[in-house]
Length: 421
Image (cartoon, rainbow, N blue to C red):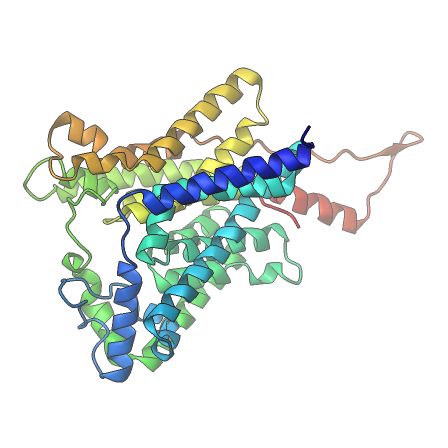
C-alpha cells in the first residue's frame, strides 16, 4: 500500500502532467507576442535611434503602450538575443508565480495543518490552469510580475514598522511606474490609513518616472503629452478580450459606447470598492483590501485584456481561505461560488462570442469575465477582526504586558490574511 506521502506525490505528479498536457495542446497560444513588442521597441530605440512610441511590430499596428520607465527597465533586453529574452522573461514570470502561490496558499495550509509542499503544488496547478495566467505567459506579458510586486508590499506591511516594514510601498510604486493601473493601490493605502506606505509608493513612482525622464526625455514628453491619451494604440474597445466595464458597454451595439453611462458605472463601482476596503481595513483584513483593489482595477480600466485578470487571483484565494473558517452551510456556498468563478476563468468561454457578441447571449457570455469580477467585488467575504488579546490576571490584578508583546499582538491583528514566514 502506498504511504500517504507517496500517494500525494503521485497524485500531484499526475495532476501536473495533465495540466502541462492541457497547456501544451489547448489552442490559442500567443507566440510571445507582447514580449516581442517590448524587445523590438528596446532594440529599435537602442540600436537604430528610433522613438519608443514610434515603433510598431512589423506587420501589425501594435506598439509600446507603457510609461517610459517600463522601457528603461527593459533596456537589458538590448544586450540579449531573442530566445534568451524569452527564457529570461519566462523564468522571471515563474519566480513571480512561485512567490504568489507561497503568499496566498501558505496561510491556508498553516491554519489547517495541511502538507505545505502538497498545498503549494495544488496551488501552482490551479494557477497554471487559469486562462489569464496562461495568456500572460504565452503573450510574454508583465502582469504576474506586477501582481508579485504589489503583493510583496502586503508582506512588508504585515511586518509593521520594523526593519523591512519601512520599505512597504516600494513594490506598488515600481508597479505603477511600469503600468498606470497599479496606482489605484496607492489610493487603497490612503483609505486603509497607511499614509507612510502610500507616501513611499507615490515617491517611488515619481522617482522612477523622473529617472525615465532623464534617460529618455523625448519619449517621456511624447508619452505624457500624447501617447497616453491615444487609446486606439491599445486596441479596439469592443474586442472580446477587453473584459472591462467599458468593453462590455462597447459590445452592446455597433456604435461607440456612451461615455457618460460608463463614467456612472465606474463611479458606482468605485464607491462600492471604497466602502468594502474601508470595512476590510477596520477588520484588519489587509489581504482582503488588496484583493478587492485588484478587482476594481480590472473593472474601471478602459481596457482590461483577459491576461490582465490575473489581478483576480488573490480574490479567489482570499475567498477560499475565509470560506474554510466559516460554518458548514456558509462554507459550502462560498466554496461553490469561488469554484464557479474559477471554472469560468479557466474556460475561455468568452471566445465563443468572438465574431458575434450582440444580443443577450453576447452580453452575458461575451462579457462573462466582467460579471465574474464584479461578483467577486460584491461577494468576496471579508475576514472578521481577530479577537482582542486577553490581559492575564494574576491574584485579582491585571498583569501588565510588555511593549514587545503588545507590538507582536498588533502585528498579528494587522496580518490576518497575510502570509507570515
